[in-house]
Amino acid sequence: MNNVTVDLRQAIINRVQANSVQDLTEVIEDSIGADERTLPGLGVLFEMIWQQCSQPEQQRMVEALHQQLHQGENPSPS
Image 1 (cartoon, rainbow, N blue to C red):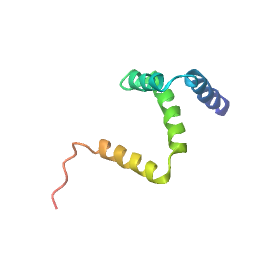
Image 2: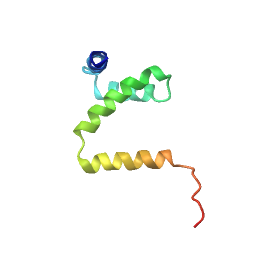
Image 3: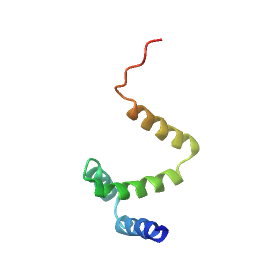
């Protein structure tokens, strides 16, 4: 299964590698909210971004994700 994962990653990278910045933006925007078949591609792209970000940038992304996951939650009374 590990070879399948590596092959999938490489296939996704190969598919978008020659894209312009505008093309990459469109790929991401078109994938968000689409059916679940696009999720592995977004995951590979996110992994590439994550690996190139500094620790403060990673922390900012995690905090933004945490905020989105808990948006609309009512705080329990103290």
